[in-house]
Image (tube, rainbow, N blue to C red; front, side, top):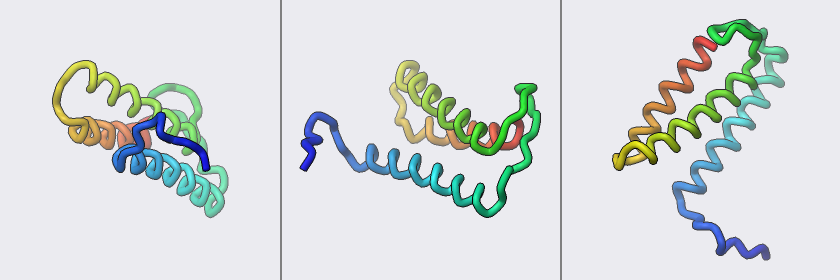
Length: 94
């Protein structure tokens, strides 16, 4: 058995990774069901696919959470709301 005592495996940490893996799996199923996903040019002025938009939204959400931790003492649940809005905005506009 691998010793994972070096990391604080809490339920929020586990849920975080489960959601990330679930999103990637869901994107794979979506790509299998509807290949291609019709790349489009959005506000960033370059062509993006669904996978690109997922990557941008995950990366942006990580920076939103880090900035939230740096800027405020409020709960990260509020940052989750901001991240969800960012996710929807990226998939709609980018």
